Amino acid sequence: MRIIVTGGAGFIGSHIVDAYLALGHDVLVLDSLWEHGGGRRQNVPERASFVHMDIRDQNLARIFSEYKPEVVCHHAAQHSVAISARDPRYDADVNVLGLINVLEQAVKAQTRKVIFASSGATFGTPDALPIRETTAQRPTSPYGITKMVAEHYLRFFKAEHGLDFTALRYGNVYGPRQDPNGEAGVVSIFIGKFLQKQGVRIDWDGEQTRDYVYVKDVARLNVLALERGSGNCYCIGTNQRTSVNQIYRSLVEITGFQAPVTPGPKRAGDARDAQFDYALARRDLDWEPQTHLIDGMRETYEYFREQMKFA
Image (cartoon, rainbow, N blue to C red; front, side, top):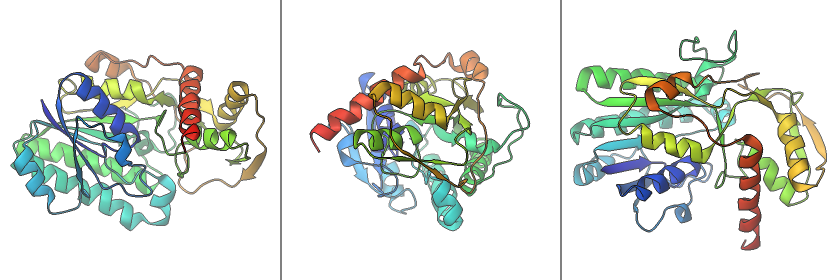
């Protein structure tokens, strides 16, 4: 199968590329390598083709016309809640207009399907947990708003042009290759600080919770979505809530280092709690998470420790 993975040099996208290649698919990675996006050229394996391009670029038409992908796995995005709050115009430019450019080129290239990285941020702070597909979407950040809007565009392009889709509303994905220097991804950020024997900042009271799902479980999900989940959106998580303070305590246990803690204010746009019921994904996609948080954190820590040896 010929697959374009936008954002395929990034944290989640590169793991998906690995999973597709392992099954013998023909993969083209398209990534802007934006400094705040986490895309790294070294994340792209030699067996994948690579195009250095922004999804908003009009030259995207040429790439789609020449490659003619059967499936597009769309993971390129402005993914930071904090950046979206500071610069909502830029966030919308990438996450909405960039998506429309991808969808238009997919239609012209007669692409069969788009697998879309949506987000649990589309729900904001829900009235009840766990969050299900039927939970009202009330995003509290521009990032969450653009991901919700994107889902509506996917429905439009399916109805108007027959372009199929599966949208995956991720919880907090963590794992190897996540940018430890970015503004998103508390697990990797904390690991980076622990490895350098530095202090960490815990915003709010640290009791805000998220549903942390391991990146290799997400990569396997994107394989299953190649042939399943037609025209639907799915909540993707572990159905477990974990606080920032618990993440901190787990890293103390893993590393044996008690990093000094500096308190910080609540970040703009941050939701209080999240927990995702993945029952529909289990039913339709035959997927469920397989990695326990402490095991995934330990693997992620070991990955970054190895990286530091060669830095």
